[in-house]
Length: 275
Image (cartoon, rainbow, N blue to C red; front, side):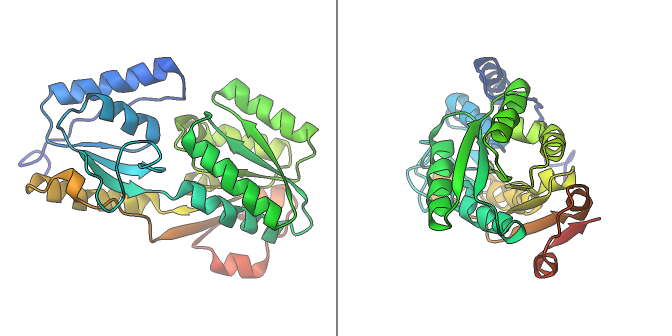
């Protein structure tokens, strides 16, 4: 019970992907360690990586890590072997599914954009999987990068020049794609680019469609990991879990604004339809 037998120390940041943001995250994590916390929880990749640099023996519960093995945070999912545990988002693995959903809405599309962030291992995996999925479906994939608001606008301009007919935005673990989700939805609408996102929150603020693990489920399930750690289990001995619940969210308001007809069978499969 918070305030009786539990104290939560919060640190809030609004970050993108540059060195200044990284320094801010490391400083916040260092403050938590100085407060002698028993466990640190962190959500996006940059925050998790920052915490790992200064946590020492303080265990870390990762809420939405893209690929902890690829990032060098864990030796394996079954036995992390270090001071981390938590849940992944399967970001690279889901990009093919998101492409298929986009093609279900735009069956004639032949040119699709893929928006990614910093050129790190996770984004390279997303691009690799996206290219394989596109090739298997006879689609040309145009990859564009963005790590800031100005780069977002430049990315959409590049997609327009490349005559992209739709777009994918994967969950890359980059904070800018989450903090700028409303701007991305606005740019997609302004450029009439039907988009499938890897975060349900993107559809909630105007994105067309999202298919992703349930963020709410992840945050609630974090308590399970924290409970085990506080009762004495080492974080590195708790298997890192992969998501089992996924959400399909369709924004019909955006579909109407883009003059797109979403197949009825897809609407029936949706967990949520925003009208």
